[in-house]
Image 1 (cartoon, one colour):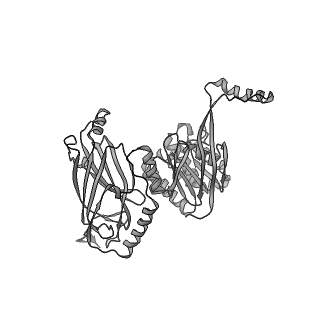
Image 2 (cartoon, rainbow, N blue to C red):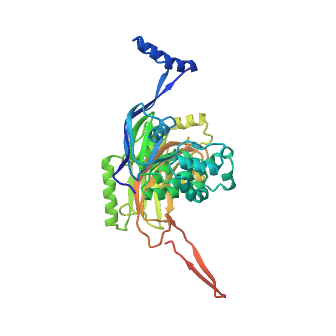
Image 3 (cartoon, rainbow, N blue to C red):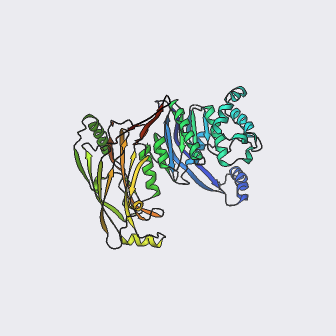
Length: 467
């Protein structure tokens, strides 16, 4: 639950590290400047400065979950360490309100020779808990970590996954005002990650502020409210999670043909569109025709291909997806043979090109997708430079809400391909409330049979019609 209270204020900070070419230079740097200063001679540095961060400013409100994105070496971990107080900024100021819990380096705060139980007490004490409070929470911590008898063994015998489980369990028991997570959840298995995110959701509801570093764009979109994008030590974007992940993808896959980010005008149009759909959903089928200049979205890829047009038929007025009915998406796309030939030289083994489409919810989690690689459709991409394909999709029953359509052109095969052009979330679609109950994201077709009651055999079938 977000509020207007600012809990983290970062004002124009920078962090410089001193890089020494040889060990003796460190000693020279410690001694010589003092002598030079005493003799009033010009100071000489015996190190090369490396600016990990420069002129970073932002604020975080109480209860916000903030995803921090950037390529390796962009300064993400350094920023978290500055906020956590592990490092001090070279210039600028950081103001933090509330106690901080962090999962920055696995094993930090643990004594490798102590058992897991002893380290729970050690970590709890470092985080401000009394011995009585630790004892009261110990069963909760042990249950969450779920490492069994290893809790009584030395931490130095733990795997990285076990270390994460114990560290996360301690932090969750403390319930800090601000929680900092630096890629730590990437270590855990899927079951433990699910448990962690459920617990994080509970903390968010209680007003805990969460800073979250990850290379998973889907994870950031689904979990975070705000996104920060760092590039070579500079903060280049602070926006909603969807826009931030799109900007991050454009850094990973620079494309000279990229369309710029969505403008404020297009955002305003989208808001108006949503209101129109809710107020006046006329269920008459219509066709949408899109050309590249109308696909105002983030794109990335190596280039050399583009969508010429998309024709979507079977939608209801207001871009409403019909529930359980067929829609058709016709796509004409073109490519440059020279680009494909270069990719063959660089390791792509199969001479096949395709276009794919996918549907994602407003958090960026994919609902479904389809492409030519998946069904074995072969396109002779060296015979011509353009083709038209058509998808026929029977739409499933989905939960009410906003959804986004993505399209992409790729070269290769399903297991080994390169993205030529990716059009990320280029179109907003709407799902209205269905007559069916949707428990989760999608409603399934099922039968429920009463076999017996009070010892009397019976056979009664109830089938739910997807139509």
